[in-house]
Image (cartoon, rainbow, N blue to C red; front, side, top):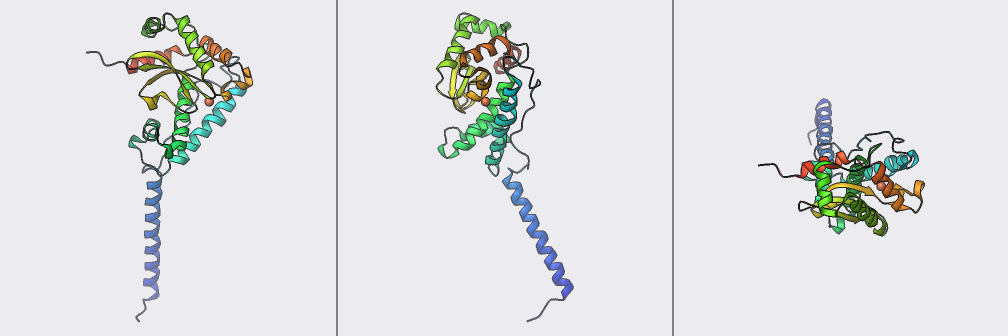
Length: 241
Ligand SMILES: [Fe+2]
């Protein structure tokens, strides 16, 4: 059998290594969804962690944002590594995994990442009070008054069994108060989220223990960012002819 000269064999060895490396890089790119970047990011808080006290203490915000929210984002990225989604957005992951028993872990972490990012934007220091403009008109027309809306919202929070979320949503153009259990999200049900309060115990137990209604009432009275809610409503309106 003819043997290759030593220098040619070294060249072949190097070529083989390069080919293997190229395939490895391609494989890793495929595994990361083609673009190499993570789908989920930890969105920065639009205020400092102690800015919502005393309604939400810095301790609660620290655990909620740094541990719970960051944990959902990290796990959602780990679980979606190698999966392909149109647009590579959190919304696309939620849409593709909703109702799929085999994808429950992906859905739960993706939805929790999205729900938390949305929830934190629904709050602001010195918020609360009553909304104005179209949002106020629609609340009055739908629920009778803002006071009646708040009563309905806090009752829904009280009645949500176990962990979950309370939402103000648009359902086919009409306002509605709905709850979702655990990680579930209105996005998975064709509803447009406008406002939410997290009623998992980690959201309030350090500050309120079992007094969930007091927590929700205080959020509505002191932290609700109605400007953000009005902006969501505006975005959801059909374009004017
Ligand atoms: Fe939470």
